[in-house]
Length: 176
Length: 291
Image 1 (cartoon, rainbow over the protein chains, first blue to last red):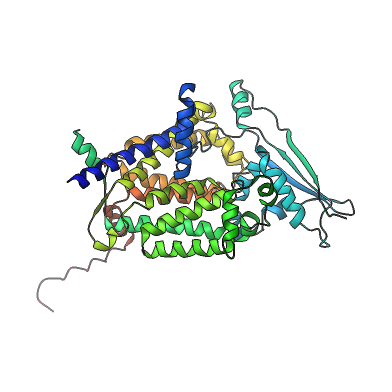
Image 2: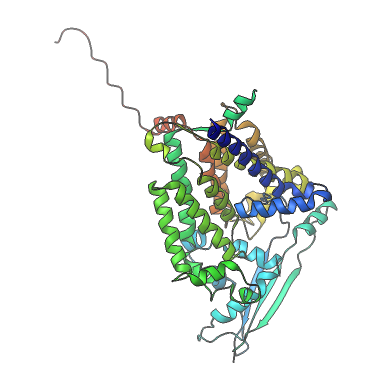
């Protein structure tokens, strides 16, 4: 009898704990600042359980698109656009099955600084020109509006204009 | 509603046939996702891949653990495929679910920059999955599960919370332009620049219908008459999304798999009855004397 009640109690506790974790991790920003230390603890616990989500699928839609070009300079000084070679393997099946992560990776590279350097370093190490030689320089050129920029622009009734928001060149070590 | 009936509500009645389809849907989508990483595996999850510089400056414990595993991430990939196959075959499904959760969590930790939303979806799905009595399907008897109810509530929260943020953050969801911008986005849309996207009424129709479908799901799915319409309607909605949009295919499939949590035996029986060709009715024999 005691075990039965204990199991029921634990079930109810887990039920509400999971609900609180999901709700806090999603709507925590709406709570007053006084709750922020508690919210942090709940969010870290929710993250461990895999319950931290930001369910904002297309909540703010991009007005101007997100574009990223990967340009490379060969040892001879020739500039090349290697975007497709880097992100897409070509063909219907690759495009729809194997390259499904390209969109989010491009989005992360345009909007978030941390992955950029490490990705450029990877390109310098792996990408080769037509002669099989490493590139002298690779650079990321991107455009897009941040979510908060879109939100601010849409409040004013303006949709902003496309502008280069990312220009990051990197000279490859070991290049001729 | 009494406390006892509220308590009973927390446990979903799981019928064997829908439970099997739900497990197979989850396992198949997750396995296909893992296999779809093959061509980019060395870029995303090997020590010489894109994380090399970042990890040298910001140590990530998962990479330290990976260094201890013989064969590194390739062993992880093989183990991941194996536990998925066990899960699909119904062998120790709860344990396998927990192991699949570990695999997805580990992959997210290894490379947070090249990850998609569906990976987070797999994380919570297989965490709940570790507590769902999948093996009950073998007994042929219905089972009751609180983890399955939590799973259902989680799906409701996904639609509810995303609808809330849509209404709060972007006026385009009010004036009906939102789907137009989504379909014109060159990164996400397969139909960007096509003329029909800009036809009068098209964007408004899709914007408001998706808002109503997603926003009403959490409230109306508990109503017996509305359940099949909403569940299968959203399945079609996600399928059509993956047709017109790119890079979100697995997210759509993961959502479709999660919607199996609401299916019932009668749904499959109705479906089979509609698909199966009806036997042709024989011509009635004439009564009377033979000539």
